Image (cartoon, rainbow, N blue to C red):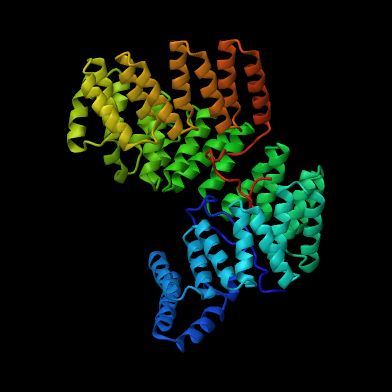
Length: 546
């Protein structure tokens, strides 16, 4: 086995894959600290005998390595940059810079650093392996393939390079070539997961899904709970549009990942799609109880709910909220229920929230009062809330609402604009601000607000539905269709999104539009995944969708 036969590595928890495995690790963890053993040491020994700048560069590189090992990535980046400024032609410094960049989830920076190392050592196997692996992840396929070819010239059995070649062949729909590469990898190492995965993907895409699934099951060997193999089993069923068989391996992936939110969300979405509503609600509550510090996870969960479940949390299940770890989970859930008009469930969420969360919920209680025909009391509370915190978004939205009702438009506009500025990812802030302009018959400004909202949060159902309803009032059929079409493309896996587009097409009596919406709807019924944000590069790792 050569030095580059590594398994999969895990991305940093803040990366796009949310901690899921990336592609391959050209240098196994057992063979390196941050750099392959011996490389940095030999470079430092050679430099230590040179001039003072060289000696200083060596010291800085040692510091960078130590900082990175300790997890101080900012100091590590600073130190290695200073070392390179003193001795730019030392390839091992660029290798270290690349690995530090990877630890910082900066794949582009890592790619540049490893490429820079090749400028000073064109046959460096470590740099070639990383350029090949990272290149395919960031879309530099030609460069990745070139690096893989060069690595294979130096090391004919470099499995890491073969994996890159196999994934590129798959991306180009060269199934026979991918199968051949998979077989070659397995001939070198029969237990290599990447070889099995590449071959299985090629079989699935070539119309042989049963053979692909058999290959994955054989590689797993029954009890082997491999995350990479399980993910590909899920993705083969996903490719076939079969939701029910996805559930069990997705559950296993959630357990293997220690409840990674991305995995949980995939499971929740799949459970809803196959009609297992109670299980989906249970999985939702488990995600909320475990918590996430990334607000985007709650936005994705609410997008799933908006499509399938008006009341995912009930008064009966609310007592469990007392054990939720993250206050943001409580706030996000209560806001969703208020927005859906289920004030009883929202009140139960707030009532059962942990004690440490209660101070954050005062304005949400006031919103419930306002929506429960207790507006006079709600009005009295708003000013007190904003005196205590003049950036309280929920209180600001209430002030804007009350001031609009009183035709105090300047006061309403000030409050609504501040709310929108403070929380630009909250769809309600755009609807409230647009309502202020609409009350003044400033339709042009109201439309601007909606358009800005859809640009900022292009996958939010509430905002899109509010805007299309407004466009109906204006009689603007053309924009209603185009807004709904753009939205449906941004959440292409959602049948509901295409239904919304179809409704706009029907209103406009546009037969061609209706055909497009119907085709999108039919495709969405067979597409079972959580849509990535618009513009997200495809995941070309071994964990990516087929």
